[in-house]
Length: 180
Image 1 (cartoon, one colour):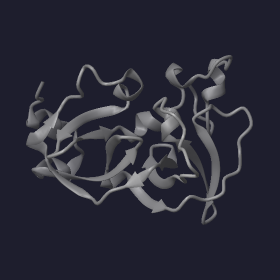
Image 2: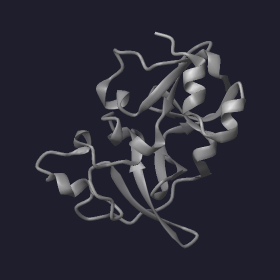
Image 3: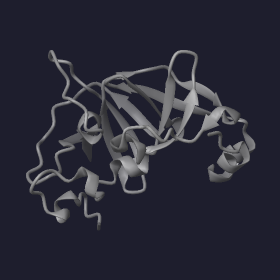
Image 4: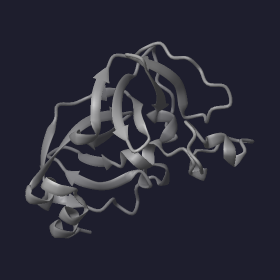
C-alpha cells in the first residue's frame, strides 16, 4: 500500500519538508537492509570493548566510553530477535542521536549513504516480522532489495514489553533514568 508523499513530508521537520528526497545511512543486520535518516547519525565506529551492565535488558550489549561520554550499546540482532553473529564476526557501532542522548546500535555491515525520493516511500508491509514491524517507519523499493527505514527513537526505547526477556520484571527495561 502506497502512502501519500505529502503525508510523509508532514512528518518531516522544518526544511526537510521542502525537499523531494531524504538521505539514509544504510546498514545490514543479518539479511535485513535498514536505513536511518542521516540527520540522526552522530558517527560510525569500529567495535569497541564494552562494560557490561548488570540487570540490563538482553538487548543491551554494554556501555562504551565515547570521548568521555558514556553511551549505551544495543545489539540490533537481539533487538530484532535474530540469531547471534557467527564465526567471530564483530559488529560496527552506529551512534545515533535520540531525545535521550547518543546510543550505539551494533550492526553487521554498513552501506553508502542513499538518496531516496519521498514519492517512492511506502508503509511497512503487513507481513513484516512483528519484532521488526514496530521499529520500521516505512520502506523504499530498491533495484534488488527493500530499504527498511528504522525509527531510531523506538529502537532505543527499551520500555516496550517486546524487549522483555524471560523472568524479567517490566522495570528491568528502564535505562539511563528513563521512565517506562
